[in-house]
Each structure stands twice: as C-alpha cells, then as structure tokens.
Length: 229
Image (cartoon, rainbow, N blue to C red):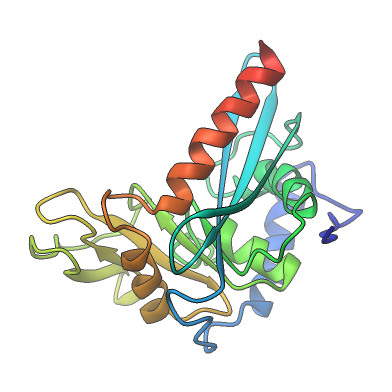
C-alpha cells in the first residue's frame, strides 16, 4: 500500500482554499520532462458525484504504459468535503482521490487527470494540486477549454495549437483523432507540456479521450452506482 495523506487543515471555505492555492502553486515544477511515453505505469483519475446525497466516488486505474492493459485499480467513496465553486473543484475531489491512490498496491507512475493542471485561472488545477501533494508526475487532459482562447488545430491527428490566457500559453489544444473535436492538455507537476502532449497521443490510439480517463470514468461511475443503489 502507498500512503498519500490528506493535509489535516483541509479548507472548508472559499477564502481559505484560495489562500492554499496561492501557497501551494509556488511548488509546482514544470521543467522536468517526466517519464518517457510508453514506459512504466500511467494512472487515470476521475470522479463522479451524486449531488442529491452529496457523495463523491473517485477511481484510479493503473495501465501498463506500453500495452495500455490494466495493471491495478482502486476506488473510494465519501461525502463531498467542499462546496461547488468554479476554480476550486480540486478541494471537492482530492480527498477521495487520495484515498483511492492509497489503496493501490503498485506505484501509479504518471497520473493523468480528467481536468486541468496549469491551464487554470490560478494556474493550479486538480492535476497540479494532486502532484504537489503527492510528489507524483501529473498532467491534465480536459474535454473543454475552461475560459481560455485558442484557434482550432488542423484536422490530422497530432495537430496542436496553443491554449492561451492573453499571451501566455497555459496548455495545448490537441487533436487526438482526425477530424474529431480536440482535447485540452496541460502540464500538472514534474512534466513538461511537450511531454504531456506526447503522453496524450500515446494514450489515444482509438478514441478521443485517453484510455486512462475512459477506464477511470467507467470505474468511478460503477462505484457510485454501487454506493447509492
């Protein structure tokens, strides 16, 4: 078992949470390349909610990075620990995610979140937050661009364009399937943006979204149904 401990002073209000973001984002590392694509483990992270019961289910699915076969998986279900506030979703999700990660019997390797890393208004989305707390290499692959601007990349698979906040590139718009809506990739922690994009392409041999995300999405939804059914 690998221990990933939630900080004891976990915020419960917006003001405190923003202060925590401001402090922790100074620890984000973006100049390490991360593991080479196709090596070691890649772990997908996703969560599902039952808003009526205020329950969140987190799933982590470890894949062999070379074959994309499932190596290990774990889930955690618990009460939602933070109100819904745009830009602060990590405070709702990380408690359950850390519990699920702690239930793995193998090292997760690179962690791929269904969401954002530095492509976040405060440059500290779920992937960056999770990386700083655990020390793991992390990245985000999101379905939508949050509030940032971009030009559509060319149609072929592998085409990309900058995801911009003003003149700053906070992520990349990546075409993982020819002629299909792109995804929005950002570095989280201990991974460069170029490396994150290379991993995203490696993880999408057949579908728009990474296999890590697809597997984690199915597992967290199943865990939530079991917990509430």
